[in-house]
Length: 387
Image (cartoon, rainbow, N blue to C red; front, side):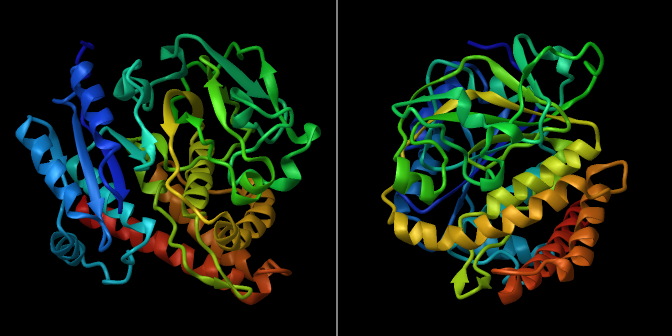
């Protein structure tokens, strides 16, 4: 069994399906002796089957720390925090914000966000892999360093059946060209004290690509590179919520952005985690902190999706990301902790919103940014309320 880390690790998941993902995580937590460290927060929704609550109760009987609040308990919790009822809408993946708030309240040193279609591998210590967050670069043994251009294609770390490259959901289309992509470079001699703020694990089987890529390429991942990759502060990549950890200090910058806003005759969806990941990454870069990609590697067994419907929901997000990111990469923020920097980002979004023009922006895109910034402020106020 693993050496105890003696820290608080909160794993947050939202689910509306049968709990077939759960045993793998419980087995891993037990096998590596992590059950004292870990609280698993399962945030259910109105469509979640009763079997999830039953499985959570059974895990508690076996000595695991599980928090699986009922729908009424969730509502009471948000009310206690003074949040308007519609701040975290039902039947959306936005519900995972409840788990994030509870992790913050619990004093979690590490927040791990997972999806219920990501299955935990048995051969590596899931919690330990993610526990690199909050530690300096010098604590990493064996990694590669990526720099020299604004973007890194994390899917280049995956082996697929395709000859062509694939790119992660949220990677701008304009940055899917060689000239935009960073490469492995020698590890810089200075900066070893920089903290790893975010760690994103990779996936086997079904990679996290957008519906456009699924329709045209249908990639399947057979293997992922063993070695971790650290991005230079100048280099970016999408970060999702499927298998991702943040150090405590960075949680204030990881509000899960609300979807469902009407844009250009579409309704934006399936990009909340992408916006969240970019915003958190911007704050980390401002703080001089780093993002790591690699282990732990999960198996992504997607639940059945209508890819054309997914594409309809993703298209507005794809367009917004394409225009927003060049601005986000350049904008100067202020502040010396994540809360202040995130507040500064919310203000910058509000100020910039009227300046975006064109497809999707003219039909709700600007209002979407303003509303998102307002939600970011409410989020920060709520964290302050919790203390």
